[in-house]
Image (cartoon, rainbow, N blue to C red):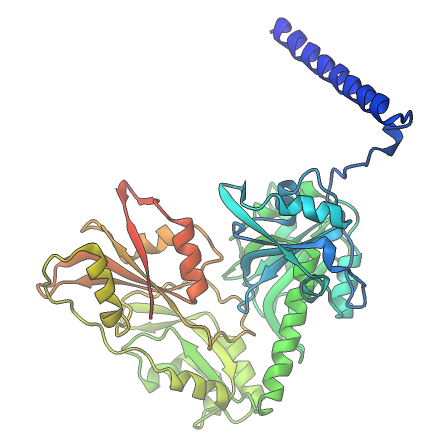
Length: 479
């Protein structure tokens, strides 16, 4: 053992001597005696900084990265570009319209030379995923990283060097700062939140969205806090994700922009509520019983916006009991225009039964699938994933359909759901097992994702991944 240690030290020493010899050779060739003094320093850690809309940026220092793993953080991106100097606050993770990370990030470097070196890392790997690196503009970076909300700016300004921000999702609407402090302080991995380090994400009218950002003084406390992922506050389980200053600005600004856009779009009253996830057996009386006291305000709509907001706050994520069935119901406040958008895209027709078919070549079978896939009604609706943010209505996004083949006869919808939900950022709406006309399972299933982007990410992250011991074939259905 001692011999091995001595050998390592000797090799390190010889390496240092080699570097000095190279420096001396360069000095002799260039005639420069102070060559060492002109060597550029390489930053070893990512530094925080606030980016404001009035910040002046040149376009020659920004790149866009694509294909990032959903769990990638700003520190992972800094590690990907290790050896290059990223500007303070120079990593901005991009979010989708649903408020989820979309696998892209904008990175700002200290000078154009660093940016050119960064472009040479195109298709290098991060966490077994190859990353695409492209040129971007300073305006692209400001659109993602800059924020004008004074409350968000004050929040991120509290962070010292080494501070860590965590995003909480799925909070009860009546959650208080005291409950969050207690949530992180209790248990063996208790940790202390930075003074004033809690920022609730609210709509423009002050109503909560169920999201919050929490700041910790150092990396150690932040890592302890992440161990509390999917623990509960009250009856709600809470999701925790490492976040960034740029993400704080994006989420806060996007909520305000969405509210302003909704107000500008007809300035309609939000005196309606939308219930999602109802059992097929539900009747009017079941809905009235489910809404409880707030049901007395029902006409064709609620009698006021306040009544609709109260019903949504009290009934959201509660359970509806019909016989022996218990279903998890989501309740959103909405306007008549929102209802019209939903009615314009009505539920799909009832479940179909596949007729026995001859053996076609694989390409032919896949070409026939789109013609029969759209008309199906799910037989299983997952109820453990809260919405991305209740304030965001992704009504315009098209769902994504994935055909899964090669299933064993004993596989259940819950097994398929667990297979895809290794990534909590991907939202699954339903799973349907396909049957032949003889009522036997066809060994195939259709998985409906909330958006086509989620379906594509699920395919990319599960290529070649088996379910149990059986390899599965996954294909995206183009509708």
